[in-house]
Length: 383
Image: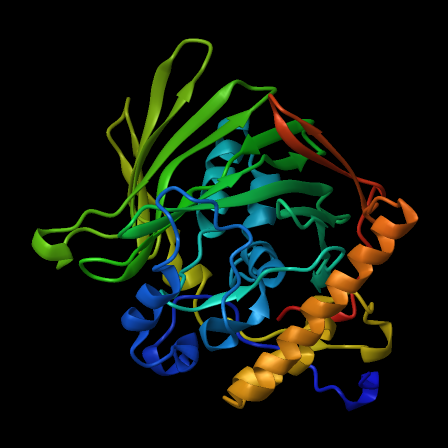
């Protein structure tokens, strides 16, 4: 076993809009399409890919927990505070829609983050916002998130389960689970879901967010329906990518108040149906570009379950492009998890998450409730 002090913590840039030279493309394997096709040649149509393991050559040097967390704490603008400071319920709702769009981040085709291990955590602070994620189930993979901002009196609770399916020329990851944003000063709870992630293999490889996101305020009855689309022209070339179209309406009267139109990686506009006025509510270049890696404020306070600690050797090997060492490091983590599972089964013990109470209902799916009312400050600081 490697001592903690011998491990090098790797903190990478968040997924963001960036110049080619600043992107994660350095981790893209050569002859990628051919390799991907070889990976999927024995996978049947419609089969469940939640247990499918990628070799390190196809991994980003970070865990999926980090990617989920980045969508919450990595922004150049403080959109959460704007949600809280809206003067009217409608102002706040529009700000929540804007914030929800900001959680959509670019993804790279052919490289993916690590599948989190059971009990893995990711704990980060940015300003007054403290964010905690825990992998509460491994088969199926379920991630819980709890974030609190004591200054703004804001709370977030997410529970999500990606379910990827293989469809011959594409893989679509449906993201099940509910996201809640609570503006406690106003007594408002907003519920929303995530778009699905579609990986196209043929005719032209690519990754896009698709599907419908519904955002609802339980107290005011305001609702938004946002459709994520990416259209392709002949043979997959050209087309209109990363499109968002939708509406905001009052569910009590079904009256449409605003139309939403734009691109989540560029700008999104809001049109007042009554007055006809159009304004930009979201500019991706101002919110999710020029983001910097987080910093480690106190290494001694990092939990053993922290993503950057668990995957440190693998991440460093990927950064160094030492694929043999990366393969060994990944196998060490996976073998340790198999051993712990066997030990629990031998003792007749069930895994109990440390930070969440988890339940499952066939009709409503997974529910993850945080054990503590607020999230503590973290030793990892987002800039």
